[in-house]
Length: 226
Image (cartoon, rainbow, N blue to C red; front, side, top):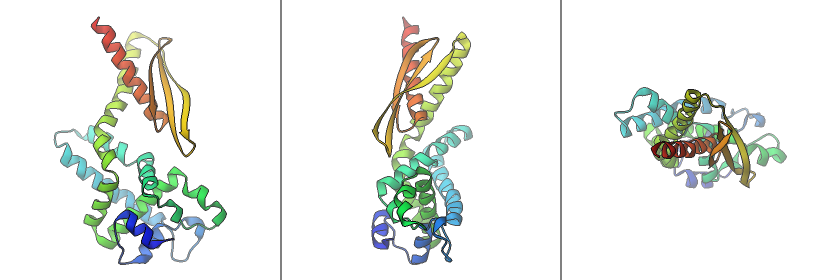
């Protein structure tokens, strides 16, 4: 584990280096000093609070349900794993079997855990303000996109409602998978009443399906205007 490299990348210098080391220690390492599991637990709550407060300030008129959906779009496995990938710190993970280190460190679930553990370590070492600075910087794009992401999810719900009203069968299919294996781009289509009416791309199947639903709704809206 390269402490200096990590601190430079996350933009925070630890007073207690043991906290940082624990945040990067996987349970397979079996170290007497502990692993990141408890930090991950705390980090989940700290992260949730920071993002909740930010969304509350950004959208003071939004109802609880919409704010909850927006938070779920941000504080979830994909965005957190993506943030760790962008930081380029997962290779510092301390594991019990060095030959498995790369494979373990590339799992999205592990990257998500790592982000939460680092958040908790910063919080314990430097307080809420330091943790907030880290979280809001690394998740800035996801926070900015949260409102749109919720709209995409709502698009899928609206399309389902439309299909039910019309008595039409709706189905989604994965058309292709592009990009690198560790960062795939999914291409999905949606068929309503036996007719393909939308295609979308995304970093996950769910996102691709949501974009396909958006395209389908646009087509339906334009058709109804005629």
